[in-house]
Image (cartoon, rainbow, N blue to C red; front, side, top):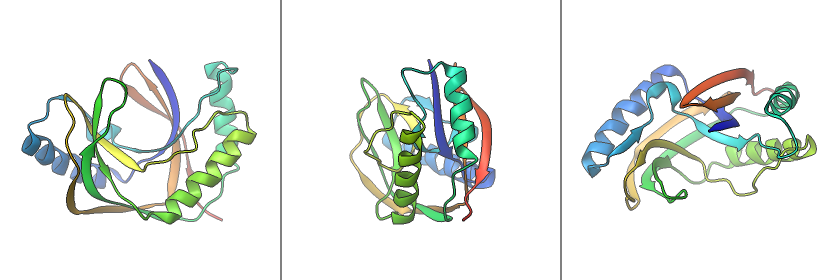
Length: 172
């Protein structure tokens, strides 16, 4: 399966710390499944999908659009873990609320993507998937995990790999 999306990835050091903490949370709940390694941990901003475009055209449009996107740096802050249903799978993820700067940036990105011909869902639940788990886990509070969002990237997901197709700073 191939996917194209805009995302934020915290620094590699932060992703390593999240992966280590995630391993402890996964073990504490006895979860089994496909664990996201530190290199693939990300916060999805929006899928870059358009039924009428070829993959190459979607990539070109998304990269062109990204060069025009401007925004202010904001903060990601996750203080809950839990699962939600995604088809027949259960992503166990970090989640949080009240990230208005992130929500504002995502709404701006969505509007610009729609103008460029992409179909972008209106709903947005900031999360970082730790494992595609075998079962659902209820929400549990955790000590906050935070990082500054200062850039975003375009990612091609293919065959389990995440390929970065560009990275752009958030600046006004």
